View (spheres, helix red, strand yellow):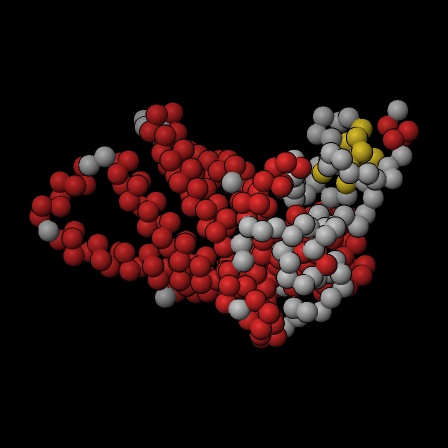
Length: 303
């Protein structure tokens, strides 16, 4: 019980601290660019024309809505985080309780020496089910969070309170509206989890020397690196999910010119891929000007 409470408190603290970052990220994903590009330097030190980064974007939001405005959508996101942590923990606890009687059986002693890959598959499957259950239950709060952020673009006040937002979605879209963008989000989480654990297993088994004294530390590093790599590969699923959650919901940010009206998440994927925008919002610092966009940037300063 104490572990669950500490996880909830830690998760809530990280959610509050990261709220401005997510706010900026979501607006960029939708395609909202209120600030013109500036002359800056890329990671190689070369002068380039690039879009403003996280801090300039956040300063723009604060100049309109104040610093408190950077935490728009925090309440439903906190609800999502707390509920997701509880559901995730309950599902894993259920599997652990079901496994205890099996460990007492003498015939199961030999199974401890079975392939470690089987153990990875077993643990990954349980984690997948736990995460999927948490995502399924908390997705309505995720949709409300995104829509309350995106309404900054058109200065609407359609999704202000949690209860009012729930009533608005149910009245206009029914139950289906609470699960807009759910499929790509689930697919992204599942693919990312299996990629991360499979790559970590391969690295820990075949690339690291088991005789090294810092083996456990090296394994934790490999898990972090493979997790980052997997999240980069599955980022398009996150982008598509967020766009579908706000698409055609009555907000300016979910309608042209910021976002086309998509018929399905596959249609959204294809249109983003065709336009070369599958990584939009992935970077918040070194943001190059998208191909085909026209901005008033004085390129003579680059000479």
